Image (cartoon, rainbow, N blue to C red; front, side, top):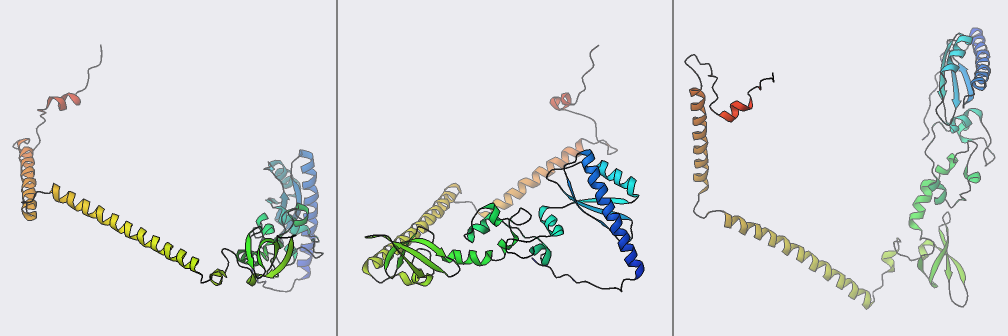
Length: 323
Protein backbone atom coordinates (compact mmCIF):
# COMPACT_ATOMS: atom_id res chain seq x y z
CA UNK A 1 0.00 0.00 0.00
CA UNK A 2 1.21 3.48 -0.87
CA UNK A 3 1.72 5.79 2.09
CA UNK A 4 1.26 9.56 2.09
CA UNK A 5 4.56 11.18 3.09
CA UNK A 6 4.57 14.77 4.32
CA UNK A 7 7.77 16.78 3.92
CA UNK A 8 8.29 19.82 6.15
CA UNK A 9 10.79 22.51 5.06
CA UNK A 10 12.38 24.15 8.09
CA UNK A 11 14.60 26.68 6.36
CA UNK A 12 16.60 27.38 3.23
CA UNK A 13 20.01 25.69 3.13
CA UNK A 14 22.92 28.03 3.80
CA UNK A 15 26.41 27.90 2.31
CA UNK A 16 27.62 26.12 5.45
CA UNK A 17 24.99 23.39 5.03
CA UNK A 18 25.98 22.87 1.40
CA UNK A 19 29.67 22.59 2.37
CA UNK A 20 28.83 20.01 5.07
CA UNK A 21 26.78 18.01 2.56
CA UNK A 22 29.60 17.99 0.02
CA UNK A 23 32.07 16.92 2.69
CA UNK A 24 29.69 14.11 3.76
CA UNK A 25 29.44 12.90 0.16
CA UNK A 26 33.27 12.74 -0.04
CA UNK A 27 33.41 10.71 3.21
CA UNK A 28 30.65 8.39 1.95
CA UNK A 29 32.44 7.69 -1.36
CA UNK A 30 35.69 7.05 0.51
CA UNK A 31 33.90 4.73 2.97
CA UNK A 32 32.34 2.78 0.09
CA UNK A 33 35.71 2.28 -1.66
CA UNK A 34 37.37 1.28 1.60
CA UNK A 35 34.57 -1.16 2.44
CA UNK A 36 34.84 -2.83 -0.99
CA UNK A 37 38.62 -3.26 -0.57
CA UNK A 38 38.19 -4.81 2.90
CA UNK A 39 35.47 -7.17 1.60
CA UNK A 40 37.79 -8.44 -1.17
CA UNK A 41 40.68 -8.67 1.31
CA UNK A 42 38.76 -10.88 3.79
CA UNK A 43 36.83 -12.68 0.99
CA UNK A 44 33.43 -11.90 2.49
CA UNK A 45 30.35 -13.10 0.59
CA UNK A 46 28.63 -9.70 0.48
CA UNK A 47 28.20 -6.73 -1.84
CA UNK A 48 28.44 -3.10 -0.73
CA UNK A 49 25.58 -1.13 -2.29
CA UNK A 50 25.70 2.39 -0.89
CA UNK A 51 27.17 4.56 1.86
CA UNK A 52 25.59 7.60 3.45
CA UNK A 53 26.75 10.19 6.01
CA UNK A 54 24.38 12.41 7.95
CA UNK A 55 24.81 16.18 8.29
CA UNK A 56 26.40 15.86 11.74
CA UNK A 57 29.33 13.91 10.14
CA UNK A 58 29.46 11.54 13.11
CA UNK A 59 28.09 8.29 11.66
CA UNK A 60 28.36 6.36 8.39
CA UNK A 61 25.50 4.11 7.19
CA UNK A 62 26.62 1.36 4.81
CA UNK A 63 24.01 -0.83 3.09
CA UNK A 64 24.88 -4.25 1.65
CA UNK A 65 23.23 -7.36 0.21
CA UNK A 66 24.13 -11.00 0.81
CA UNK A 67 22.41 -14.37 0.50
CA UNK A 68 23.68 -15.96 3.74
CA UNK A 69 24.75 -14.67 7.12
CA UNK A 70 28.19 -13.00 7.14
CA UNK A 71 30.55 -12.21 10.03
CA UNK A 72 31.48 -8.57 9.30
CA UNK A 73 33.07 -7.65 12.64
CA UNK A 74 36.54 -7.26 11.06
CA UNK A 75 35.02 -5.00 8.41
CA UNK A 76 33.49 -2.69 11.04
CA UNK A 77 36.74 -2.56 13.05
CA UNK A 78 38.90 -1.58 10.08
CA UNK A 79 36.40 1.01 8.84
CA UNK A 80 36.17 2.60 12.30
CA UNK A 81 39.97 2.73 12.61
CA UNK A 82 40.46 4.36 9.19
CA UNK A 83 37.49 6.77 9.15
CA UNK A 84 37.45 7.62 12.90
CA UNK A 85 33.62 7.58 12.77
CA UNK A 86 30.79 5.36 13.97
CA UNK A 87 29.91 2.62 11.48
CA UNK A 88 26.49 1.04 11.03
CA UNK A 89 25.92 -1.77 8.49
CA UNK A 90 22.43 -2.39 7.15
CA UNK A 91 21.39 -5.45 5.12
CA UNK A 92 18.83 -4.81 2.36
CA UNK A 93 16.93 -7.03 -0.06
CA UNK A 94 17.03 -7.30 -3.84
CA UNK A 95 14.04 -4.96 -4.27
CA UNK A 96 15.68 -2.26 -2.11
CA UNK A 97 18.86 -2.70 -4.12
CA UNK A 98 16.99 -2.05 -7.36
CA UNK A 99 15.29 0.97 -5.79
CA UNK A 100 18.66 2.51 -4.89
CA UNK A 101 20.33 1.83 -8.23
CA UNK A 102 17.32 2.34 -10.53
CA UNK A 103 16.61 0.90 -13.94
CA UNK A 104 14.16 0.52 -16.84
CA UNK A 105 11.42 -2.11 -16.63
CA UNK A 106 9.99 -4.37 -19.35
CA UNK A 107 7.31 -1.73 -20.09
CA UNK A 108 10.00 0.76 -21.18
CA UNK A 109 9.46 3.07 -18.21
CA UNK A 110 11.43 3.70 -15.05
CA UNK A 111 10.90 1.16 -12.26
CA UNK A 112 7.80 1.73 -10.12
CA UNK A 113 9.85 1.46 -6.90
CA UNK A 114 11.80 4.58 -7.91
CA UNK A 115 8.81 6.63 -9.08
CA UNK A 116 6.04 6.10 -6.51
CA UNK A 117 6.28 2.82 -4.55
CA UNK A 118 7.18 3.26 -0.88
CA UNK A 119 6.36 -0.24 0.42
CA UNK A 120 6.70 -3.57 -1.38
CA UNK A 121 3.54 -5.71 -1.36
CA UNK A 122 3.66 -9.49 -1.46
CA UNK A 123 3.76 -10.86 -5.00
CA UNK A 124 3.22 -14.58 -5.73
CA UNK A 125 3.23 -16.81 -8.80
CA UNK A 126 -0.52 -17.35 -8.29
CA UNK A 127 -1.10 -13.75 -9.45
CA UNK A 128 0.53 -14.54 -12.79
CA UNK A 129 -1.65 -17.66 -13.14
CA UNK A 130 -4.83 -15.66 -12.45
CA UNK A 131 -3.92 -13.23 -15.26
CA UNK A 132 -3.11 -16.06 -17.75
CA UNK A 133 0.46 -14.84 -18.12
CA UNK A 134 3.41 -16.90 -19.25
CA UNK A 135 5.17 -18.50 -16.29
CA UNK A 136 8.58 -17.93 -17.90
CA UNK A 137 10.74 -16.30 -15.18
CA UNK A 138 12.42 -13.94 -17.66
CA UNK A 139 9.05 -12.46 -18.67
CA UNK A 140 7.48 -11.98 -15.25
CA UNK A 141 10.63 -10.93 -13.34
CA UNK A 142 11.81 -7.35 -12.93
CA UNK A 143 15.21 -5.69 -12.73
CA UNK A 144 15.68 -7.09 -9.20
CA UNK A 145 15.27 -10.70 -10.49
CA UNK A 146 12.09 -10.99 -8.41
CA UNK A 147 8.47 -11.11 -9.54
CA UNK A 148 7.34 -7.76 -10.92
CA UNK A 149 5.46 -5.54 -8.47
CA UNK A 150 2.90 -4.63 -11.15
CA UNK A 151 1.46 -8.17 -10.99
CA UNK A 152 -0.37 -7.12 -7.81
CA UNK A 153 -1.99 -4.01 -9.33
CA UNK A 154 -4.86 -5.76 -11.17
CA UNK A 155 -4.90 -9.06 -9.31
CA UNK A 156 -8.11 -8.26 -7.40
CA UNK A 157 -10.02 -7.56 -10.63
CA UNK A 158 -8.82 -10.78 -12.26
CA UNK A 159 -9.71 -12.92 -9.23
CA UNK A 160 -13.21 -11.40 -9.10
CA UNK A 161 -13.86 -12.11 -12.80
CA UNK A 162 -12.33 -15.61 -12.60
CA UNK A 163 -14.87 -16.57 -9.94
CA UNK A 164 -17.68 -15.82 -12.41
CA UNK A 165 -16.07 -17.54 -15.39
CA UNK A 166 -16.43 -21.28 -16.16
CA UNK A 167 -13.40 -23.54 -15.88
CA UNK A 168 -11.52 -24.74 -18.96
CA UNK A 169 -12.85 -28.09 -20.20
CA UNK A 170 -16.19 -27.71 -18.40
CA UNK A 171 -19.49 -28.57 -20.13
CA UNK A 172 -21.64 -25.47 -20.65
CA UNK A 173 -24.95 -24.64 -22.23
CA UNK A 174 -25.19 -22.01 -24.98
CA UNK A 175 -27.92 -20.73 -27.32
CA UNK A 176 -26.42 -23.06 -29.98
CA UNK A 177 -26.37 -26.14 -27.71
CA UNK A 178 -23.99 -27.76 -25.28
CA UNK A 179 -20.23 -27.49 -25.68
CA UNK A 180 -16.86 -27.50 -23.90
CA UNK A 181 -15.04 -24.38 -22.70
CA UNK A 182 -11.92 -23.84 -24.80
CA UNK A 183 -10.74 -20.35 -23.77
CA UNK A 184 -11.76 -17.54 -21.38
CA UNK A 185 -11.20 -13.90 -22.33
CA UNK A 186 -11.18 -12.40 -18.84
CA UNK A 187 -11.00 -8.71 -19.76
CA UNK A 188 -13.86 -8.89 -22.30
CA UNK A 189 -15.74 -11.49 -20.18
CA UNK A 190 -16.26 -13.76 -23.18
CA UNK A 191 -16.07 -17.56 -23.42
CA UNK A 192 -14.88 -19.53 -26.43
CA UNK A 193 -16.85 -22.82 -26.66
CA UNK A 194 -15.91 -25.89 -28.66
CA UNK A 195 -18.74 -27.85 -30.32
CA UNK A 196 -18.22 -31.44 -31.46
CA UNK A 197 -20.18 -32.93 -34.32
CA UNK A 198 -19.21 -33.36 -37.97
CA UNK A 199 -16.08 -31.40 -37.05
CA UNK A 200 -14.85 -29.22 -34.17
CA UNK A 201 -16.42 -25.75 -34.25
CA UNK A 202 -15.42 -22.79 -32.07
CA UNK A 203 -17.78 -19.97 -31.18
CA UNK A 204 -17.42 -17.01 -28.81
CA UNK A 205 -20.24 -16.07 -26.41
CA UNK A 206 -20.76 -13.45 -23.74
CA UNK A 207 -20.66 -14.65 -20.15
CA UNK A 208 -24.37 -13.83 -19.71
CA UNK A 209 -25.28 -16.25 -22.55
CA UNK A 210 -23.40 -19.22 -21.06
CA UNK A 211 -25.09 -21.53 -18.54
CA UNK A 212 -22.96 -23.73 -16.29
CA UNK A 213 -22.91 -25.18 -12.77
CA UNK A 214 -22.11 -22.56 -10.14
CA UNK A 215 -22.89 -19.60 -12.41
CA UNK A 216 -24.92 -16.54 -11.48
CA UNK A 217 -27.48 -17.56 -14.15
CA UNK A 218 -28.18 -20.88 -12.43
CA UNK A 219 -31.62 -19.70 -11.25
CA UNK A 220 -32.54 -18.76 -14.84
CA UNK A 221 -31.41 -22.18 -16.06
CA UNK A 222 -34.21 -24.02 -14.19
CA UNK A 223 -37.08 -24.99 -16.48
CA UNK A 224 -40.54 -26.09 -15.38
CA UNK A 225 -40.57 -29.63 -16.76
CA UNK A 226 -42.11 -32.61 -14.96
CA UNK A 227 -38.82 -34.37 -14.29
CA UNK A 228 -37.32 -31.37 -12.44
CA UNK A 229 -40.49 -31.00 -10.34
CA UNK A 230 -40.46 -34.66 -9.32
CA UNK A 231 -36.74 -34.39 -8.44
CA UNK A 232 -37.35 -31.32 -6.28
CA UNK A 233 -40.32 -32.94 -4.53
CA UNK A 234 -38.38 -36.15 -3.84
CA UNK A 235 -35.40 -34.20 -2.42
CA UNK A 236 -37.73 -32.16 -0.17
CA UNK A 237 -39.41 -35.35 1.06
CA UNK A 238 -36.02 -36.89 1.87
CA UNK A 239 -34.99 -33.82 3.85
CA UNK A 240 -38.27 -33.86 5.81
CA UNK A 241 -37.91 -37.56 6.71
CA UNK A 242 -34.31 -37.01 7.82
CA UNK A 243 -35.41 -34.17 10.13
CA UNK A 244 -38.20 -36.29 11.61
CA UNK A 245 -35.77 -39.16 12.26
CA UNK A 246 -33.34 -36.89 14.11
CA UNK A 247 -36.17 -35.47 16.25
CA UNK A 248 -37.44 -38.96 17.13
CA UNK A 249 -33.92 -40.10 18.06
CA UNK A 250 -33.48 -37.13 20.38
CA UNK A 251 -36.87 -37.79 22.05
CA UNK A 252 -35.98 -41.46 22.55
CA UNK A 253 -32.65 -40.54 24.16
CA UNK A 254 -34.34 -38.06 26.52
CA UNK A 255 -37.05 -40.55 27.57
CA UNK A 256 -34.44 -43.27 28.08
CA UNK A 257 -32.42 -41.04 30.42
CA UNK A 258 -35.59 -40.01 32.32
CA UNK A 259 -36.67 -43.65 32.83
CA UNK A 260 -33.18 -44.57 33.99
CA UNK A 261 -33.27 -41.77 36.59
CA UNK A 262 -36.72 -42.84 37.82
CA UNK A 263 -35.58 -46.47 38.24
CA UNK A 264 -32.54 -45.49 40.29
CA UNK A 265 -34.46 -43.06 42.52
CA UNK A 266 -36.45 -44.56 45.43
CA UNK A 267 -40.19 -43.72 45.14
CA UNK A 268 -40.91 -42.95 48.85
CA UNK A 269 -38.01 -40.51 49.45
CA UNK A 270 -38.79 -36.86 49.93
CA UNK A 271 -36.20 -34.33 48.75
CA UNK A 272 -36.39 -32.08 51.84
CA UNK A 273 -36.05 -35.00 54.27
CA UNK A 274 -33.04 -36.36 52.36
CA UNK A 275 -31.31 -32.95 52.51
CA UNK A 276 -31.96 -32.64 56.23
CA UNK A 277 -30.58 -36.14 56.90
CA UNK A 278 -27.39 -35.32 54.97
CA UNK A 279 -26.92 -32.11 56.98
CA UNK A 280 -27.43 -34.03 60.26
CA UNK A 281 -24.78 -36.60 59.27
CA UNK A 282 -22.35 -33.78 58.40
CA UNK A 283 -22.89 -32.18 61.81
CA UNK A 284 -22.19 -35.50 63.57
CA UNK A 285 -18.93 -35.89 61.68
CA UNK A 286 -17.84 -32.35 62.58
CA UNK A 287 -18.70 -32.91 66.28
CA UNK A 288 -16.64 -36.12 66.34
CA UNK A 289 -13.66 -34.35 64.79
CA UNK A 290 -13.83 -31.52 67.37
CA UNK A 291 -14.01 -34.05 70.22
CA UNK A 292 -10.92 -35.87 68.92
CA UNK A 293 -8.98 -32.62 68.69
CA UNK A 294 -9.90 -31.72 72.32
CA UNK A 295 -8.84 -35.17 73.57
CA UNK A 296 -5.43 -34.77 71.95
CA UNK A 297 -4.66 -31.60 74.00
CA UNK A 298 -3.49 -31.29 77.64
CA UNK A 299 -4.69 -28.83 80.32
CA UNK A 300 -2.50 -26.00 78.97
CA UNK A 301 -3.98 -26.38 75.50
CA UNK A 302 -0.83 -27.81 73.86
CA UNK A 303 -1.19 -30.86 71.65
CA UNK A 304 0.17 -34.13 73.01
CA UNK A 305 2.82 -35.80 70.89
CA UNK A 306 1.18 -39.19 70.76
CA UNK A 307 0.82 -41.47 67.77
CA UNK A 308 -1.54 -44.28 68.57
CA UNK A 309 -1.40 -45.51 64.98
CA UNK A 310 1.73 -47.72 64.61
CA UNK A 311 1.78 -47.44 60.80
CA UNK A 312 1.75 -43.62 61.03
CA UNK A 313 4.51 -43.72 63.68
CA UNK A 314 6.74 -46.10 61.70
CA UNK A 315 6.31 -44.05 58.57
CA UNK A 316 8.05 -41.01 60.03
CA UNK A 317 10.52 -42.93 62.20
CA UNK A 318 14.15 -42.29 61.22
CA UNK A 319 16.28 -45.27 60.45
CA UNK A 320 19.47 -45.65 62.48
CA UNK A 321 22.66 -45.50 60.42
CA UNK A 322 24.50 -48.74 60.02
CA UNK A 323 27.52 -49.10 62.27
